[in-house]
Image 1: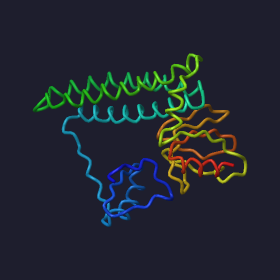
Image 2: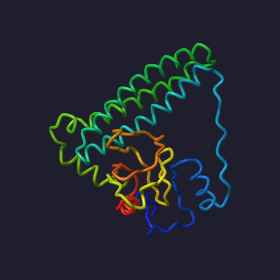
Image 3: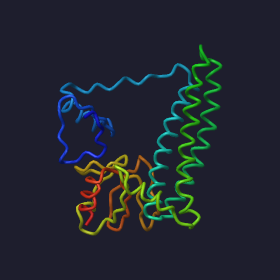
Amino acid sequence: EDDWILNPGPGTRLEAGDVTLLRGPETGVAEAYPELAREPFEPDEPVEPAIDDLERAVDSIVLMKNLSELAVDLAYGSVLFDNAALADEVNNLEIEVDALQSRFEAWTLRAAREAEDPVSLRGLIHLGVATEEISDAALEITEGVARDIGVHPVVEMAVQESDEIITRTVVEAGSALEGTRIEEGIPATDISTSVIALRRPEEGWLVGHDIDTTLRAGDVVLSKGTRTSAAEFEALAA
């Protein structure tokens, strides 16, 4: 039928000719790819920019992209749970992305002096502007929560009906999740989910793709994944 299945689960059957989109750490992709493609996974060799300022600009745009993605995730979480603390984190992330964009543009313009074709860098600048607009949009999503004026029901329904959802899980004492290691935001479980934020009573919020910690009883975990993985993750916390 040539349709995308956006929320695959245990009942989804793969067939020859299917196109799959994989996302995750390189180690996880390297394990799954040979099973799907019947050939070894060979990652592309990273290209080293010949201009130092251009390399700094590329590093900045990658960080902006990661922070903007995180801001969107946290914005949806703040709407779903009417959580002002997450809305504050989105505001902090938006400020950081703005500062990164300023440095990114400066490094790109400096790199243009040494580039053989400076016009070719226009696309990079457009990408930076678009990435910054994503973090601005995330901040707008949280306005109702941040100002304590409520969220429009249509916005809340859109979040709740999305294929990939954000769930709030409290780690109970003695549960299977207690003592679970999280490295780079990925819990050491067999469940395909990622931790986007964690609140610890004595430490406040831990946010970011590079969360490295061990879950404790009482931790409040915001995770992102399919509805199937979310249900399995919550079951481990009980």
